[in-house]
Length: 409
Image (tube, rainbow, N blue to C red; front, side, top):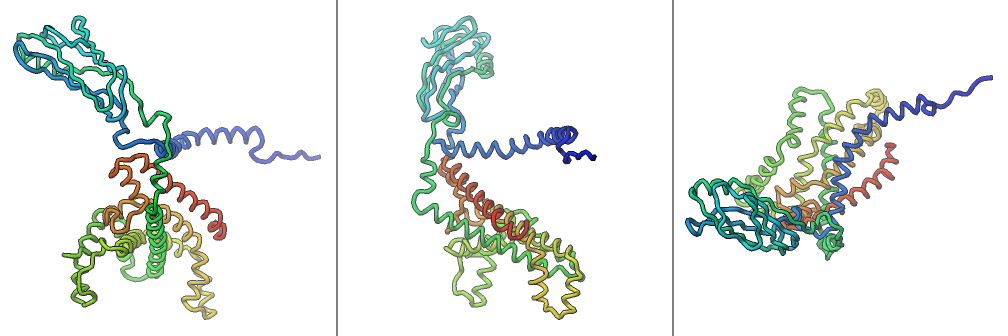
């Protein structure tokens, strides 16, 4: 009679190994959660808050101290203000220590002076309110007293409603995002830029990989030149394109006019829909080297025996490419399409440097910047970021649900 062996991982030793593995993985999981999940939750939280750029810092009383006047009019002056223009601060108090060498003659009725300790109760400060406290003093050395007053640090206390952390929510941010036809126009521009930029980068990368898949003299130098658009600083190549296609002094316009292609200069980055086409072409040119590297590496790992067999059968170069190379490349092309789609959808710096989002090139990421910083509406900017996240989540679900299954990924 034989005893059945328990499946691997179900016995006591397997359970201990599983606990040890999870224990070793826990620091990594915790770090990834802190870096990825917490900021994501913060974006969702801010997207439903009526918060502007000035509300990121909680309301607090701010004080400036100075020694004013001279002789009989010598006084310590405290200028207090509410840092928030909307939210009130309750229970505002000021505490300070009287500098050495000063004798109090009279003080503000809101202040109590005990020895060298000063405590002033200002009550509540409305949004944007300013208060002034003056304590008249006498001294034998005004210069030393002024230096001592400037070196002291008054302490302020008070409590105010922090919009960022309270439980006041609103749906106005999303209503503003989806209001009118503007959102759908921006979404269409984003999809055009993303889809054609991604497909173009893959096709040009595939074409470049086919050209350099053969051994020839100078192959390494040509590969290095192909990588230049990707490794060059984006701000340098963006401004190079702007200068090259400038309607007044650009070389491209001068060449087109001299060749008779056009009778007047073309504003490549200032006219619709040419500006959108140009930024898409820039995206293709700048990021095709990444696709080129991955595709070339996959091509060089394909077994050459089937190509030799195809040559013996009289297959044409196109037939070898379509029936032999393409099926082998579908996996890497699918992965590259997924990555490039996500990266291009999130792209901001290229468009902002080339056009600033003008002339019909305003994408969702540019809209995030404009809402959050140009309009100073952090909540609306976060709402657009949530929309971007949902769009990419839907695309990723569709990709892994349908496309990756068909490609066997």
